[in-house]
Image 1 (spheres, rainbow, N blue to C red):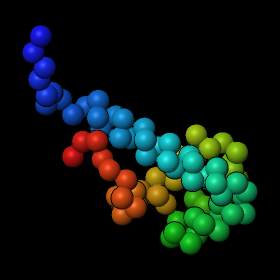
Image 2: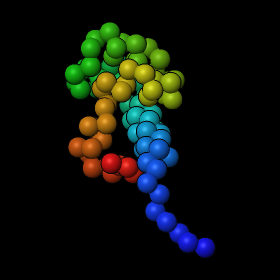
Image 3: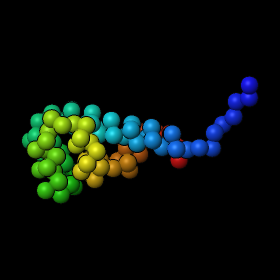
Amino acid sequence: MVLRISSNRGPFLLRTDRIRHRLRQVQLKQWKRGKTIYRELIRRGTADNAARQVAGNSRRWWRNSAMLLNVALPNTYFDAEGVPRLAN
């Protein structure tokens, strides 16, 4: 059996996206309350309307981490925090 390195980046990109999605969810869980979520999103430069919408659904972590939270916590945020990417 011969093992080769695959040039297909697709599965790695998908996993990287899922990891970032999960990290956004964990961040929302740590903020816990709608007030805290709103305050932190405003501090990160999110529009008032978007921050209100995410904070209003404060217990729907998985759904919120896929929507407007991508603006407040983009992939560049995680790059700056030192989270490695699986595929470049």
